[in-house]
Amino acid sequence: MFEGLFQPMHLLVIAGIALLVLGPKKLPELGKGLGESIRGFKAAMANDASSQSKPDDKRPTNENG
Image 1 (cartoon, one colour):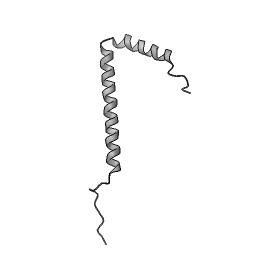
Image 2 (cartoon, one colour):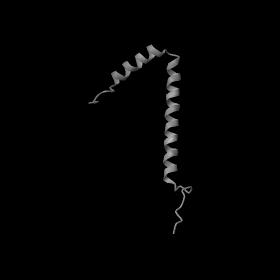
Image 3 (cartoon, one colour):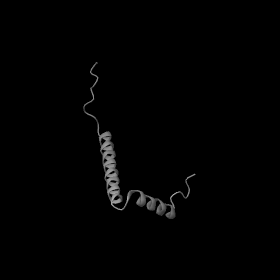
Image 4 (cartoon, one colour):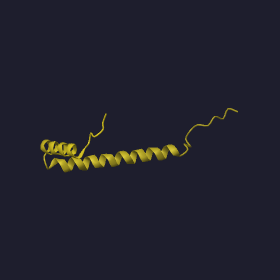
């Protein structure tokens, strides 16, 4: 269904439309913000994965026996 969706010509057209809509001053700011958000997401995912791999010492133990 998505075969050939992002060919180089398509990406150039999308970049041209983004440049026309946002302007040359806003485009680098948008890229910087997108990069920072992706880095933050990756850091949060890595933090979550590392916290799940460690045993949780705060769980209550069942001492009925």
